[in-house]
Length: 173
Image (tube, rainbow, N blue to C red):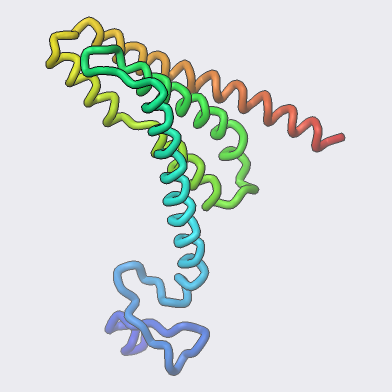
């Protein structure tokens, strides 16, 4: 092993004499990261754009279905049920096929659906309902969120599997 390797330095293949860089804790040189950096930035951009889209959709539904602190938070429940169904469908179709780019899969799932749905809104609604003396409504909301979300994900997955089967059949023709 060379002295440079003992000191934590590594040489890249691109320029063995000039491009000596610290290997850091990863053990990878700058050459190893060159191909991954643009991909990571593309993924970050897709998640950011997806986040804007998901947040805008969420706000639109919040404006269409407003509720007070004492009312059943129907808007948040519908948002999370729709998001669970959509993510289940994506998981069975688009996300299951690794032929689509990672940035697109992550942008749709984490970006759009992740920003559209939110557990924190469920938690805040539950706390607000309990503090306002609406424990029964809070219990119903929690049950509807958990059971409905799971059911919506199963339904979405079934729809996605059917769509995937249909697409596979069409591709064979």
